[in-house]
Image (cartoon, rainbow over all chains, first blue to last red):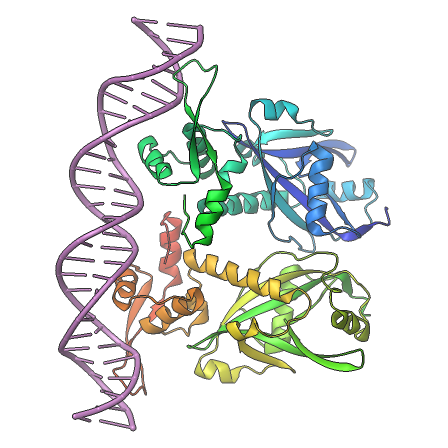
Length: 246
Length: 246
DNA sequence: CCAAAAGTGTTAGGAGTACACCCATGA
DNA sequence: TCATGGGTGTACTCCTAACACTTTTGG
Protein backbone atom coordinates (compact mmCIF):
# COMPACT_ATOMS: atom_id res chain seq x y z
CA UNK A 1 0.00 0.00 0.00
CA UNK A 2 0.94 3.60 -0.56
CA UNK A 3 3.46 4.57 2.11
CA UNK A 4 2.14 8.12 2.17
CA UNK A 5 -1.13 7.00 3.74
CA UNK A 6 -1.95 6.68 7.43
CA UNK A 7 -3.09 3.06 7.56
CA UNK A 8 -5.77 3.25 10.22
CA UNK A 9 -7.51 6.58 9.73
CA UNK A 10 -9.84 7.38 6.85
CA UNK A 11 -12.17 10.18 5.85
CA UNK A 12 -15.61 9.59 4.35
CA UNK A 13 -17.65 12.21 2.59
CA UNK A 14 -21.41 12.53 2.94
CA UNK A 15 -22.33 14.91 0.15
CA UNK A 16 -25.84 16.32 0.27
CA UNK A 17 -27.16 17.79 -2.96
CA UNK A 18 -30.53 19.49 -3.31
CA UNK A 19 -32.12 19.41 -6.77
CA UNK A 20 -35.27 21.44 -5.95
CA UNK A 21 -37.27 18.25 -5.29
CA UNK A 22 -35.20 15.84 -3.22
CA UNK A 23 -32.31 15.89 -0.86
CA UNK A 24 -29.79 13.54 -2.46
CA UNK A 25 -26.55 11.94 -1.37
CA UNK A 26 -23.63 10.88 -3.46
CA UNK A 27 -22.91 7.15 -3.36
CA UNK A 28 -20.28 4.94 -4.95
CA UNK A 29 -21.44 1.63 -6.36
CA UNK A 30 -19.28 -1.30 -5.33
CA UNK A 31 -19.09 -4.87 -6.61
CA UNK A 32 -17.71 -7.66 -4.48
CA UNK A 33 -17.44 -11.37 -4.97
CA UNK A 34 -18.39 -13.28 -1.84
CA UNK A 35 -18.51 -17.09 -1.90
CA UNK A 36 -18.35 -16.91 -5.70
CA UNK A 37 -21.45 -14.71 -5.78
CA UNK A 38 -21.33 -11.17 -7.09
CA UNK A 39 -22.79 -8.56 -4.75
CA UNK A 40 -23.54 -4.94 -5.43
CA UNK A 41 -23.73 -2.37 -2.72
CA UNK A 42 -22.92 1.25 -2.03
CA UNK A 43 -20.55 3.29 0.05
CA UNK A 44 -19.66 6.88 0.64
CA UNK A 45 -16.69 8.36 -1.17
CA UNK A 46 -13.72 8.08 1.13
CA UNK A 47 -10.05 7.30 1.46
CA UNK A 48 -7.30 6.77 3.97
CA UNK A 49 -5.77 10.09 4.94
CA UNK A 50 -2.29 11.10 3.86
CA UNK A 51 0.52 11.48 6.33
CA UNK A 52 1.15 14.99 5.05
CA UNK A 53 -2.35 16.44 5.10
CA UNK A 54 -4.73 17.80 7.71
CA UNK A 55 -8.00 15.97 8.26
CA UNK A 56 -9.95 18.81 6.69
CA UNK A 57 -7.65 18.75 3.69
CA UNK A 58 -8.30 15.02 3.22
CA UNK A 59 -11.98 15.67 3.06
CA UNK A 60 -11.50 18.44 0.51
CA UNK A 61 -9.23 16.25 -1.57
CA UNK A 62 -11.75 13.39 -1.68
CA UNK A 63 -14.55 15.65 -2.85
CA UNK A 64 -12.39 17.37 -5.40
CA UNK A 65 -11.12 14.08 -6.87
CA UNK A 66 -14.66 12.83 -7.28
CA UNK A 67 -16.58 15.90 -8.41
CA UNK A 68 -14.05 18.59 -9.20
CA UNK A 69 -15.75 20.83 -6.64
CA UNK A 70 -13.82 23.09 -4.30
CA UNK A 71 -14.68 25.63 -1.64
CA UNK A 72 -18.01 24.18 -0.75
CA UNK A 73 -19.53 24.03 2.71
CA UNK A 74 -18.04 21.12 4.62
CA UNK A 75 -18.12 20.08 8.24
CA UNK A 76 -16.77 17.19 10.24
CA UNK A 77 -19.32 14.92 11.88
CA UNK A 78 -17.39 12.80 14.40
CA UNK A 79 -15.18 9.75 14.43
CA UNK A 80 -16.56 6.23 14.01
CA UNK A 81 -14.22 3.72 15.53
CA UNK A 82 -15.66 0.47 16.73
CA UNK A 83 -13.33 -2.49 16.36
CA UNK A 84 -15.52 -4.43 14.00
CA UNK A 85 -16.85 -1.73 11.73
CA UNK A 86 -14.99 -3.01 8.65
CA UNK A 87 -15.40 -6.72 9.22
CA UNK A 88 -18.97 -7.32 10.35
CA UNK A 89 -20.07 -8.66 6.99
CA UNK A 90 -18.18 -11.26 4.95
CA UNK A 91 -18.52 -9.11 1.84
CA UNK A 92 -16.78 -6.20 3.55
CA UNK A 93 -13.95 -8.53 4.54
CA UNK A 94 -13.63 -9.80 0.98
CA UNK A 95 -13.43 -6.28 -0.29
CA UNK A 96 -10.70 -5.26 2.14
CA UNK A 97 -8.62 -8.17 0.97
CA UNK A 98 -9.37 -7.48 -2.70
CA UNK A 99 -8.14 -3.91 -2.54
CA UNK A 100 -5.06 -4.93 -0.57
CA UNK A 101 -6.00 -2.95 2.49
CA UNK A 102 -3.29 -3.19 5.14
CA UNK A 103 -5.50 -2.85 8.22
CA UNK A 104 -8.50 -4.63 9.58
CA UNK A 105 -9.16 -1.64 11.79
CA UNK A 106 -9.73 1.78 10.35
CA UNK A 107 -11.23 4.66 12.29
CA UNK A 108 -13.17 6.84 9.90
CA UNK A 109 -13.89 10.51 10.25
CA UNK A 110 -16.85 11.47 8.08
CA UNK A 111 -17.56 14.97 6.84
CA UNK A 112 -20.75 16.23 5.33
CA UNK A 113 -20.94 18.82 2.60
CA UNK A 114 -23.72 20.74 0.94
CA UNK A 115 -24.09 21.53 -2.73
CA UNK A 116 -26.70 22.82 -5.10
CA UNK A 117 -27.79 20.47 -7.87
CA UNK A 118 -30.31 22.54 -9.76
CA UNK A 119 -30.30 22.86 -13.50
CA UNK A 120 -26.95 24.10 -14.72
CA UNK A 121 -25.20 23.18 -11.51
CA UNK A 122 -26.14 19.54 -12.01
CA UNK A 123 -24.97 19.35 -15.58
CA UNK A 124 -21.64 20.95 -14.81
CA UNK A 125 -20.82 18.24 -12.32
CA UNK A 126 -18.69 15.48 -13.75
CA UNK A 127 -18.88 12.53 -11.45
CA UNK A 128 -16.20 9.92 -11.01
CA UNK A 129 -16.79 6.32 -11.95
CA UNK A 130 -19.64 4.47 -10.24
CA UNK A 131 -20.75 7.58 -8.43
CA UNK A 132 -24.38 8.56 -8.48
CA UNK A 133 -26.94 10.77 -6.77
CA UNK A 134 -29.61 9.02 -4.74
CA UNK A 135 -32.49 10.63 -2.83
CA UNK A 136 -31.86 10.19 0.88
CA UNK A 137 -35.03 8.19 1.47
CA UNK A 138 -34.08 5.69 -1.21
CA UNK A 139 -30.50 5.52 -0.04
CA UNK A 140 -31.68 4.30 3.33
CA UNK A 141 -33.19 1.26 1.64
CA UNK A 142 -30.07 0.39 -0.35
CA UNK A 143 -27.43 -2.00 0.95
CA UNK A 144 -24.71 0.23 2.37
CA UNK A 145 -21.23 -1.01 3.16
CA UNK A 146 -19.66 -1.15 6.63
CA UNK A 147 -21.36 1.17 9.15
CA UNK A 148 -22.31 3.67 6.46
CA UNK A 149 -26.00 3.54 7.34
CA UNK A 150 -25.11 4.75 10.84
CA UNK A 151 -22.98 7.48 9.36
CA UNK A 152 -25.85 8.53 7.12
CA UNK A 153 -28.27 8.68 10.04
CA UNK A 154 -25.83 10.71 12.09
CA UNK A 155 -25.20 13.06 9.18
CA UNK A 156 -28.91 13.62 8.70
CA UNK A 157 -29.48 14.30 12.37
CA UNK A 158 -26.58 16.72 12.44
CA UNK A 159 -27.77 18.46 9.29
CA UNK A 160 -31.21 18.94 10.81
CA UNK A 161 -29.78 20.29 14.02
CA UNK A 162 -27.51 22.75 12.28
CA UNK A 163 -30.23 23.85 9.87
CA UNK A 164 -32.23 25.06 12.84
CA UNK A 165 -29.74 27.67 13.88
CA UNK A 166 -27.37 28.27 10.97
CA UNK A 167 -27.88 29.67 7.50
CA UNK A 168 -27.13 26.38 5.75
CA UNK A 169 -30.12 26.39 3.43
CA UNK A 170 -28.30 28.88 1.21
CA UNK A 171 -25.50 26.37 0.60
CA UNK A 172 -28.07 24.11 -1.04
CA UNK A 173 -29.51 26.84 -3.27
CA UNK A 174 -28.28 28.85 -6.22
CA UNK A 175 -27.15 32.39 -5.44
CA UNK A 176 -30.50 33.77 -6.49
CA UNK A 177 -33.50 31.87 -5.25
CA UNK A 178 -37.23 32.22 -4.71
CA UNK A 179 -38.95 31.97 -1.36
CA UNK A 180 -40.71 28.82 -2.49
CA UNK A 181 -37.35 27.19 -3.17
CA UNK A 182 -36.16 28.18 0.27
CA UNK A 183 -39.32 26.88 1.91
CA UNK A 184 -39.06 23.61 -0.01
CA UNK A 185 -35.64 22.94 1.49
CA UNK A 186 -36.95 23.15 5.03
CA UNK A 187 -39.93 21.01 4.09
CA UNK A 188 -37.77 18.31 2.55
CA UNK A 189 -35.15 18.24 5.27
CA UNK A 190 -37.56 18.34 8.19
CA UNK A 191 -40.10 16.19 6.39
CA UNK A 192 -42.99 18.49 7.20
CA UNK A 193 -45.22 20.99 5.44
CA UNK A 194 -44.89 24.65 6.24
CA UNK A 195 -47.49 27.35 5.89
CA UNK A 196 -46.57 29.65 3.03
CA UNK A 197 -47.83 32.86 4.65
CA UNK A 198 -46.24 32.19 8.00
CA UNK A 199 -42.97 31.22 6.39
CA UNK A 200 -42.86 34.44 4.37
CA UNK A 201 -43.71 36.53 7.39
CA UNK A 202 -40.72 35.07 9.17
CA UNK A 203 -38.39 35.61 6.23
CA UNK A 204 -39.57 39.20 5.87
CA UNK A 205 -38.14 39.88 9.33
CA UNK A 206 -34.70 38.62 8.37
CA UNK A 207 -32.71 41.50 6.99
CA UNK A 208 -30.04 39.24 5.52
CA UNK A 209 -32.45 37.66 3.07
CA UNK A 210 -32.47 40.41 0.49
CA UNK A 211 -35.07 40.84 -2.26
CA UNK A 212 -33.65 41.51 -5.72
CA UNK A 213 -35.18 43.44 -8.59
CA UNK A 214 -35.35 40.27 -10.56
CA UNK A 215 -37.79 37.48 -11.33
CA UNK A 216 -37.70 33.91 -12.50
CA UNK A 217 -37.60 33.31 -16.26
CA UNK A 218 -39.17 30.68 -18.45
CA UNK A 219 -41.67 29.36 -15.99
CA UNK A 220 -45.19 28.62 -17.12
CA UNK A 221 -46.80 30.41 -14.22
CA UNK A 222 -46.47 33.70 -12.42
CA UNK A 223 -42.71 34.18 -12.01
CA UNK A 224 -41.39 34.43 -8.47
CA UNK A 225 -39.37 37.28 -7.09
CA UNK A 226 -35.74 36.33 -6.47
CA UNK A 227 -33.79 36.82 -3.27
CA UNK A 228 -30.21 36.45 -2.12
CA UNK A 229 -28.54 35.71 1.17
CA UNK A 230 -26.28 38.47 2.46
CA UNK A 231 -23.56 36.87 4.53
CA UNK A 232 -22.27 40.31 5.45
CA UNK A 233 -25.51 41.36 7.05
CA UNK A 234 -25.89 37.98 8.68
CA UNK A 235 -22.43 38.08 10.25
CA UNK A 236 -22.92 41.62 11.47
CA UNK A 237 -26.16 40.72 13.21
CA UNK A 238 -24.72 37.55 14.64
CA UNK A 239 -21.76 39.38 16.12
CA UNK A 240 -24.22 41.72 17.82
CA UNK A 241 -25.44 38.74 19.76
CA UNK A 242 -28.50 38.44 17.64
CA UNK A 243 -30.21 35.14 18.38
CA UNK A 244 -30.73 33.45 15.05
CA UNK A 245 -33.25 30.73 14.49
CA UNK A 246 -34.89 30.30 11.17
CA UNK B 1 6.28 1.93 23.10
CA UNK B 2 3.52 -0.48 24.04
CA UNK B 3 2.71 -2.57 20.96
CA UNK B 4 -0.93 -2.79 21.99
CA UNK B 5 -1.48 0.89 21.23
CA UNK B 6 -2.53 2.49 17.96
CA UNK B 7 0.34 4.94 17.44
CA UNK B 8 -1.50 7.81 15.79
CA UNK B 9 -4.93 7.97 17.39
CA UNK B 10 -5.59 9.18 20.92
CA UNK B 11 -8.58 9.98 23.06
CA UNK B 12 -8.76 13.01 25.36
CA UNK B 13 -11.30 13.46 28.08
CA UNK B 14 -12.91 16.80 28.91
CA UNK B 15 -14.57 16.14 32.24
CA UNK B 16 -17.03 18.76 33.42
CA UNK B 17 -17.87 18.73 37.13
CA UNK B 18 -20.40 21.02 38.76
CA UNK B 19 -19.87 21.80 42.44
CA UNK B 20 -22.96 24.01 42.98
CA UNK B 21 -20.92 27.18 42.32
CA UNK B 22 -18.68 26.67 39.31
CA UNK B 23 -18.45 24.52 36.27
CA UNK B 24 -15.04 22.86 36.59
CA UNK B 25 -12.86 20.80 34.32
CA UNK B 26 -10.33 18.16 35.24
CA UNK B 27 -6.78 19.00 34.21
CA UNK B 28 -3.47 17.18 34.49
CA UNK B 29 -0.45 19.25 35.51
CA UNK B 30 2.58 18.67 33.35
CA UNK B 31 6.24 19.67 33.81
CA UNK B 32 8.58 19.95 30.86
CA UNK B 33 12.16 21.05 30.52
CA UNK B 34 12.64 23.27 27.50
CA UNK B 35 16.03 24.87 26.86
CA UNK B 36 17.03 23.91 30.40
CA UNK B 37 14.06 25.82 31.79
CA UNK B 38 11.29 24.07 33.70
CA UNK B 39 7.79 24.80 32.43
CA UNK B 40 4.48 23.91 34.00
CA UNK B 41 1.34 23.60 32.02
CA UNK B 42 -1.85 21.57 31.84
CA UNK B 43 -3.50 19.07 29.58
CA UNK B 44 -6.63 16.98 29.48
CA UNK B 45 -6.44 13.38 30.61
CA UNK B 46 -5.85 11.26 27.53
CA UNK B 47 -4.02 8.36 26.00
CA UNK B 48 -3.38 6.57 22.74
CA UNK B 49 -6.12 4.07 22.06
CA UNK B 50 -5.56 0.33 22.26
CA UNK B 51 -5.70 -1.85 19.21
CA UNK B 52 -8.28 -4.04 20.90
CA UNK B 53 -10.75 -1.46 22.16
CA UNK B 54 -13.52 0.65 20.65
CA UNK B 55 -13.11 4.42 20.72
CA UNK B 56 -15.86 4.77 23.30
CA UNK B 57 -14.19 2.14 25.44
CA UNK B 58 -10.92 4.10 25.34
CA UNK B 59 -12.67 7.11 26.70
CA UNK B 60 -14.28 5.09 29.47
CA UNK B 61 -10.95 3.51 30.36
CA UNK B 62 -9.19 6.86 30.63
CA UNK B 63 -11.80 8.26 32.97
CA UNK B 64 -11.90 5.15 35.07
CA UNK B 65 -8.12 5.01 35.44
CA UNK B 66 -8.03 8.59 36.61
CA UNK B 67 -11.10 8.90 38.80
CA UNK B 68 -12.47 5.40 39.36
CA UNK B 69 -15.76 6.56 37.85
CA UNK B 70 -17.85 4.42 35.53
CA UNK B 71 -21.18 4.70 33.80
CA UNK B 72 -21.24 8.45 33.63
CA UNK B 73 -22.58 10.55 30.79
CA UNK B 74 -20.02 10.72 28.01
CA UNK B 75 -20.13 11.92 24.45
CA UNK B 76 -17.68 12.23 21.62
CA UNK B 77 -16.94 15.74 20.39
CA UNK B 78 -15.13 15.31 17.06
CA UNK B 79 -11.65 14.52 15.81
CA UNK B 80 -8.82 17.06 15.92
CA UNK B 81 -6.26 16.22 13.34
CA UNK B 82 -4.14 19.04 12.00
CA UNK B 83 -0.61 18.04 11.08
CA UNK B 84 1.10 20.31 13.56
CA UNK B 85 -1.13 19.99 16.59
CA UNK B 86 1.52 18.25 18.70
CA UNK B 87 4.54 20.19 17.55
CA UNK B 88 3.58 23.85 17.40
CA UNK B 89 5.40 24.72 20.63
CA UNK B 90 8.94 23.65 21.48
CA UNK B 91 7.79 22.51 24.91
CA UNK B 92 5.27 20.12 23.38
CA UNK B 93 8.02 18.68 21.18
CA UNK B 94 10.29 18.20 24.18
CA UNK B 95 7.54 16.39 25.99
CA UNK B 96 6.85 14.01 23.12
CA UNK B 97 10.50 13.08 23.06
CA UNK B 98 10.68 12.74 26.85
CA UNK B 99 7.82 10.25 27.02
CA UNK B 100 9.21 8.29 24.09
CA UNK B 101 6.22 8.96 21.88
CA UNK B 102 6.58 7.16 18.56
CA UNK B 103 4.64 9.59 16.40
CA UNK B 104 4.86 13.26 15.61
CA UNK B 105 1.32 13.09 14.34
CA UNK B 106 -1.54 11.98 16.52
CA UNK B 107 -5.17 12.56 15.69
CA UNK B 108 -7.08 12.98 18.90
CA UNK B 109 -10.73 12.25 19.49
CA UNK B 110 -11.93 14.12 22.57
CA UNK B 111 -14.96 13.14 24.61
CA UNK B 112 -16.73 15.22 27.20
CA UNK B 113 -18.33 13.82 30.31
CA UNK B 114 -20.51 15.27 33.03
CA UNK B 115 -20.30 14.56 36.73
CA UNK B 116 -21.65 15.95 39.96
CA UNK B 117 -19.08 17.27 42.42
CA UNK B 118 -21.23 18.35 45.33
CA UNK B 119 -20.44 17.45 48.92
CA UNK B 120 -20.13 13.70 49.30
CA UNK B 121 -19.64 13.13 45.62
CA UNK B 122 -16.56 15.31 45.66
CA UNK B 123 -14.97 13.61 48.64
CA UNK B 124 -15.49 10.15 47.25
CA UNK B 125 -13.51 10.99 44.15
CA UNK B 126 -9.89 9.91 44.35
CA UNK B 127 -7.98 11.68 41.67
CA UNK B 128 -4.88 10.39 39.97
CA UNK B 129 -1.55 12.14 40.30
CA UNK B 130 -1.32 15.78 39.18
CA UNK B 131 -5.00 15.90 38.42
CA UNK B 132 -7.07 18.79 39.70
CA UNK B 133 -10.39 20.53 39.27
CA UNK B 134 -10.25 24.02 37.81
CA UNK B 135 -13.21 26.35 37.15
CA UNK B 136 -13.67 26.69 33.41
CA UNK B 137 -13.09 30.44 33.40
CA UNK B 138 -9.75 30.04 35.16
CA UNK B 139 -8.76 27.12 32.99
CA UNK B 140 -9.02 29.33 29.94
CA UNK B 141 -6.29 31.55 31.36
CA UNK B 142 -3.92 28.68 32.15
CA UNK B 143 -1.27 27.51 29.71
CA UNK B 144 -2.79 24.48 28.03
CA UNK B 145 -0.75 21.99 26.03
CA UNK B 146 -1.10 21.32 22.30
CA UNK B 147 -4.47 22.42 20.89
CA UNK B 148 -6.26 21.77 24.16
CA UNK B 149 -7.61 25.28 24.37
CA UNK B 150 -9.41 24.73 21.07
CA UNK B 151 -10.74 21.44 22.36
CA UNK B 152 -11.99 23.17 25.50
CA UNK B 153 -13.75 25.86 23.50
CA UNK B 154 -15.35 23.27 21.26
CA UNK B 155 -16.42 21.21 24.27
CA UNK B 156 -18.03 24.24 25.89
CA UNK B 157 -19.85 25.21 22.74
CA UNK B 158 -21.10 21.66 22.31
CA UNK B 159 -22.16 21.43 25.93
CA UNK B 160 -24.15 24.65 25.60
CA UNK B 161 -25.83 23.47 22.43
CA UNK B 162 -26.80 20.13 23.87
CA UNK B 163 -27.99 21.67 27.14
CA UNK B 164 -30.59 23.59 25.16
CA UNK B 165 -32.40 20.53 23.95
CA UNK B 166 -31.35 17.60 26.11
CA UNK B 167 -31.79 16.82 29.80
CA UNK B 168 -28.08 17.08 30.58
CA UNK B 169 -28.41 19.31 33.64
CA UNK B 170 -29.41 16.28 35.68
CA UNK B 171 -26.08 14.60 34.95
CA UNK B 172 -24.40 17.46 36.80
CA UNK B 173 -26.70 17.27 39.84
CA UNK B 174 -27.28 14.79 42.65
CA UNK B 175 -30.33 12.55 42.25
CA UNK B 176 -32.39 14.84 44.49
CA UNK B 177 -31.99 18.52 43.82
CA UNK B 178 -33.69 21.85 44.45
CA UNK B 179 -34.97 24.15 41.75
CA UNK B 180 -32.35 26.72 42.73
CA UNK B 181 -29.60 24.21 42.07
CA UNK B 182 -31.10 23.44 38.68
CA UNK B 183 -31.42 27.11 37.83
CA UNK B 184 -27.84 27.76 38.91
CA UNK B 185 -26.54 25.22 36.39
CA UNK B 186 -28.16 27.03 33.50
CA UNK B 187 -26.94 30.36 34.81
CA UNK B 188 -23.36 29.16 35.12
CA UNK B 189 -23.22 27.36 31.80
CA UNK B 190 -24.94 30.08 29.77
CA UNK B 191 -23.30 32.87 31.77
CA UNK B 192 -26.56 34.71 32.29
CA UNK B 193 -29.01 35.42 35.10
CA UNK B 194 -32.44 33.85 34.96
CA UNK B 195 -35.60 35.10 36.61
CA UNK B 196 -36.58 32.80 39.44
CA UNK B 197 -40.32 33.03 38.92
CA UNK B 198 -40.16 32.52 35.17
CA UNK B 199 -37.77 29.62 35.54
CA UNK B 200 -40.07 27.88 38.00
CA UNK B 201 -43.09 28.47 35.82
CA UNK B 202 -41.30 26.68 32.99
CA UNK B 203 -40.23 23.77 35.17
CA UNK B 204 -43.74 23.37 36.53
CA UNK B 205 -44.86 22.51 32.99
CA UNK B 206 -42.34 19.70 32.65
CA UNK B 207 -43.89 16.51 33.93
CA UNK B 208 -40.56 14.69 34.11
CA UNK B 209 -39.23 16.98 36.80
CA UNK B 210 -40.98 15.42 39.74
CA UNK B 211 -41.45 17.04 43.17
CA UNK B 212 -40.59 14.80 46.12
CA UNK B 213 -42.04 14.88 49.63
CA UNK B 214 -38.67 15.88 50.93
CA UNK B 215 -36.73 19.00 51.84
CA UNK B 216 -33.15 20.07 52.22
CA UNK B 217 -31.50 19.46 55.60
CA UNK B 218 -28.98 21.44 57.58
CA UNK B 219 -29.35 24.71 55.76
CA UNK B 220 -29.51 27.94 57.72
CA UNK B 221 -32.50 29.24 55.81
CA UNK B 222 -35.86 28.00 54.67
CA UNK B 223 -35.18 24.53 53.28
CA UNK B 224 -35.96 23.96 49.63
CA UNK B 225 -38.26 21.31 48.27
CA UNK B 226 -36.40 18.54 46.47
CA UNK B 227 -37.11 17.24 42.98
CA UNK B 228 -35.93 14.40 40.82
CA UNK B 229 -35.65 13.82 37.08
CA UNK B 230 -37.76 10.99 35.76
CA UNK B 231 -36.04 9.58 32.73
CA UNK B 232 -38.98 7.25 32.13
CA UNK B 233 -41.43 10.08 31.77
CA UNK B 234 -38.98 12.05 29.70
CA UNK B 235 -38.38 9.23 27.24
CA UNK B 236 -42.08 8.53 26.91
CA UNK B 237 -42.80 12.15 26.04
CA UNK B 238 -39.86 12.32 23.69
CA UNK B 239 -40.98 9.25 21.79
CA UNK B 240 -44.36 10.94 21.33
CA UNK B 241 -42.60 13.58 19.32
CA UNK B 242 -42.67 16.04 22.16
CA UNK B 243 -40.44 18.98 21.31
CA UNK B 244 -38.16 19.45 24.28
CA UNK B 245 -36.38 22.66 25.05
CA UNK B 246 -35.61 23.60 28.59
C1' DC C 1 -59.43 30.62 -20.64
C1' DC C 2 -56.96 27.18 -18.20
C1' DA C 3 -53.25 25.40 -15.31
C1' DA C 4 -49.81 26.40 -12.13
C1' DA C 5 -47.54 28.51 -8.70
C1' DA C 6 -46.95 33.40 -6.60
C1' DG C 7 -48.41 36.43 -3.44
C1' DT C 8 -51.00 38.48 0.48
C1' DG C 9 -53.72 39.75 6.33
C1' DT C 10 -56.19 38.80 10.28
C1' DT C 11 -57.21 36.66 14.48
C1' DA C 12 -56.68 33.90 18.67
C1' DG C 13 -53.90 31.48 21.86
C1' DG C 14 -49.55 30.51 24.06
C1' DA C 15 -44.93 31.64 25.41
C1' DG C 16 -41.71 34.76 27.12
C1' DT C 17 -40.47 38.72 29.99
C1' DA C 18 -40.47 42.07 33.56
C1' DC C 19 -41.19 42.87 38.14
C1' DA C 20 -41.54 42.84 44.37
C1' DC C 21 -42.82 40.94 48.43
C1' DC C 22 -43.67 37.44 52.21
C1' DC C 23 -41.99 32.86 54.32
C1' DA C 24 -39.36 29.30 56.89
C1' DT C 25 -35.34 28.09 59.03
C1' DG C 26 -30.80 28.23 61.85
C1' DA C 27 -27.81 31.00 64.31
C1' DT D 1 -34.55 39.23 65.58
C1' DC D 2 -31.59 38.85 61.88
C1' DA D 3 -29.61 36.87 57.77
C1' DT D 4 -30.33 33.84 54.11
C1' DG D 5 -32.27 31.87 50.41
C1' DG D 6 -37.21 29.73 49.31
C1' DG D 7 -41.36 30.52 47.32
C1' DT D 8 -45.20 32.91 44.82
C1' DG D 9 -48.83 36.01 40.60
C1' DT D 10 -49.98 39.37 37.24
C1' DA D 11 -49.89 42.14 33.14
C1' DC D 12 -47.88 43.11 28.69
C1' DT D 13 -45.72 41.90 24.52
C1' DC D 14 -44.44 39.09 20.96
C1' DC D 15 -44.35 34.90 18.41
C1' DT D 16 -46.85 31.09 16.44
C1' DA D 17 -50.46 28.80 14.06
C1' DA D 18 -54.54 28.42 11.55
C1' DC D 19 -56.77 29.69 7.60
C1' DA D 20 -58.58 31.18 1.64
C1' DC D 21 -58.59 33.93 -2.05
C1' DT D 22 -56.59 36.87 -5.90
C1' DT D 23 -52.73 37.62 -9.27
C1' DT D 24 -49.56 36.78 -12.97
C1' DT D 25 -47.64 34.26 -16.36
C1' DG D 26 -47.19 30.63 -20.37
C1' DG D 27 -49.51 27.52 -23.13
